[in-house]
Length: 284
Image (spheres, rainbow, N blue to C red):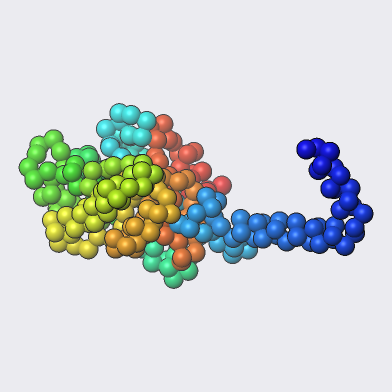
């Protein structure tokens, strides 16, 4: 096998015209691959396409912060006192807290915010969003988007979030959006690839949207993928279900073109301090 290869190569080497064609072919393939990679985002997926580096300005980098339960238990949970310090940090440093819809509008119009900005999101629908985040949100007048999975919301409960609480939160500036029905791992369902699994994904996407719209009498257009996991197939299914934008847990600033469909978010961890926030917001 090795002798055959070297004999063939030696014969080709004696024919300079064939070698020249071979060289041009290799260079062409290399150039095509380079251009493809350089025009896609860091994750090389259709959900995130970064700006031309020549167009980049730090003020265009708008991070989306992701909070969960505000009880101080677990690696992704902070206390109400920590959250207050975060809100005070934004105010003292003249950082604008804008809504997701404002962020999307700015980037759809390819416009920059007037000041350094962040957007705040909360996932799942823990009752602490009502008992702890809502009072701080009213005090600081900051908009917050809450992504809920509908199986986690009750008609009546003293320990869990209820639809009545969500209605009240909407009145004070919370924007309630979809996190599916049951918080299922949609990527695992995609990987199964059978009709039953695809039907389950469609149900998770369409029914959560419908339930929230019926319960809260509002339009639901945003989706946060459970666990932040997604694939190109899921992006297509989300579009078909009527979502105008989706959200992952990929880290990074949203310095995107208006064609972006899946936005990145930063998990806020229990041990985050002012230094971590500065890094996320790219403050020197």
